[in-house]
Length: 438
Image 1 (spheres, one colour):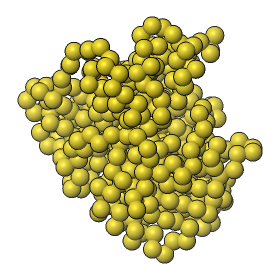
Image 2: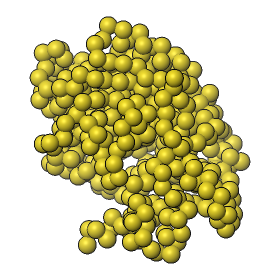
Image 3: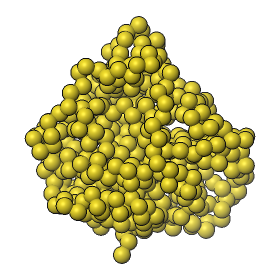
Image 4: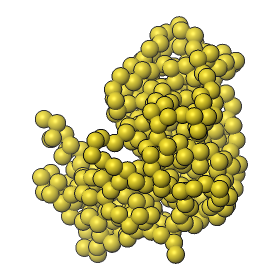
């Protein structure tokens, strides 16, 4: 029986654009813009200056806090700027701009580590940290922090998130089809680093080729199990995934470690495997470029820092009149106002929608239909939280667990009155968090 969670929705998945397209290596960019913040936690401090010559894999941003991850050059070339630049997550972020020398030379300090069997748990965690590996599903949480729970927090289960429930995106799908052994090796490294004996790789049923590839890759592996999930959004949310796979429920305000679980994305596992096999830090990733507004949808292996404009151009450019460009998928992605923003470690997709596919509907009064309540995977009352937000009732919103909202967009998607419930709840969350910092 397929595993799943209560709630959720079934939007059009639109994965046919790219799900059968093998990953292509993108051409070497002429210029990269590498933000010093591509992760949850403290931003890095640039350790290069204008005029410096750098090589691929060389550290250019130092992480001085525990919750952080170092940043590395994704190409070889000359540093032409160290200044704030637009970030695809919003705002201006201190960034290092590198003009390519066309050589793509590897930094001499890159050394192949010992095989996994010879690495100690601490060596694995240190390698993950020094490689700048973060959650590749979009959240960007530093992986070595996730693998280092505080005293008293025991972990007994690791789940690899291969659900990729966001419509249009197929980067993880193609990764699991083409490089299943890397996903498994990364999981084995995580299990060894944490001393956990139970590992699961969870994949939605709409990816049968990925399921088959992973099943073959784990045949001779002890302690690793494949879990087939129902196709439903947001099946890939951490809390929903944990509930579907283990039956455990993360408490309000809690984290996966509170129910003895660590969840890592399939892309994160592959990045760990690459670091173990080659010593290379995280300087490239698979990104799905898709949608009705791009000529040739593709899955591309891109260098971190490549401008969106260059990536879209490699996919044949825009098709007709474009209505919106989104980093990520349509449910949780972030709309972009300019295209001179760089792909970052968490850029799982670039979605280009034609103007005809972007509809701005008039907001109507709530009809109390409760569709948002039925759809909410966290079991909140979105319509009530939306009313609190409209009236600035932040204390009441917190009492109704606004901070537990995962901003998946299910409530806004099903609302027949076109009320922007997700945005309203996000507004409430921002006010609540800001008030706690005073």
